Image (tube, rainbow, N blue to C red; front, side, top):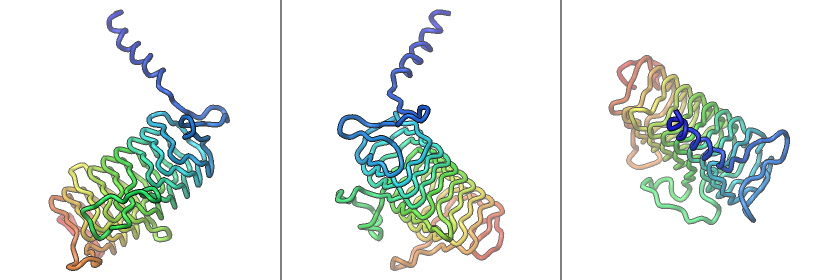
Length: 265
């Protein structure tokens, strides 16, 4: 019995040593170290803060400056990040469930060297925010510019990516193997984006009037998705390019012309 308990005790002991910054009964929550530290709150200046796997905060961060910050593994469930500046920030493996990310400023840090991209048509305005393997369930990203961002393996179920009042831009973004079930992406621009992979799931997604031209949706699942009024051709390049849906799953999918199909749109 002692031998069986020893590994468990060791794991608990190791977990207790992790530097978790969390919300504590109204006390200020400070993250980072030395000159690169800040107290979390609305319009806080947290530029360049490094706090990997150590942040747990569920409050108001409206307008916060997170330029170049590293919040890998952060728990920001339910936080209000509306209007935040996240240019150059990293949120890999972060949990942003029910977070409000409307009107955020995304992309490389001002003055940062812009990285090359295979999609020349988005240069030099590729944004490049990183949300790989993050949880963005119920998050609000409407109105944001996420051009060339990466949402690979991310969970975006029930999230709002775009609305008629606040269209979102995801041109050139990567959603490889992302969970997009029940997302609202009306009037969103996903031109030349990559959403391929057997796990990429658009089941029940609302893509009404979305721009999907030139995107790669190979093997994606569009079961009961609504694509009414959406555009499958990108005319911003010459010659125009259509979306790719080889191997995609169709079942009671509403196509661009309003008809329902189980064979393809």
